[in-house]
Length: 239
Image (cartoon, rainbow, N blue to C red; front, side, top):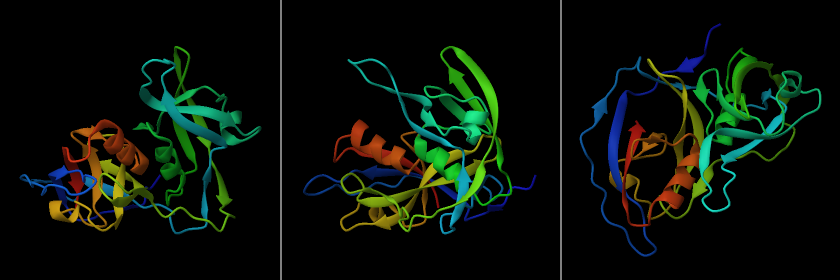
């Protein structure tokens, strides 16, 4: 099976960034960069501008803990429901199951699964690692190719507060590691701290303070939930 990929520029940067406050923000501080070869980091092309995508026949959400006191986001995504006689249903996946990974790529945010469905690839068969209660099993799902009939198309996820920028989810292959989902900068709003830190549209954010972002929404949620405005954070960026 041939995977269609596109090799971009070869710089992985570790960047310190001060999140914007309500009125002003501090200057960002750059630190030395880490250079990786073109064979090390590969961005997988998606069908973002195409009218077709795969459909696994399921709806997923964040895998939140059951605690009413201290709600945590746990690894994987929780299946909310499956389409009767759809691909996931026929593969034996049920509502309440936790999808841990797809083709060995961790799926810790619903957007990661959506990005997989938008891949430009000849593959339609995927291996899902699933947890049901205490049992972990694998299921092979063959996605249906479908037309996107809705005229509305998502452009990006917006972060109007912390970084004042818009992001889309990208799948990234790193040599020697499983594929990961990252966040590409697609829009930079006025007074964003990103340009001052050397981050521009097209750059891909892999991690914040060493923790994978998992998706565009994952990056936005992490910044606004885990950090205070004006706090300095470290971005790992593929330029």
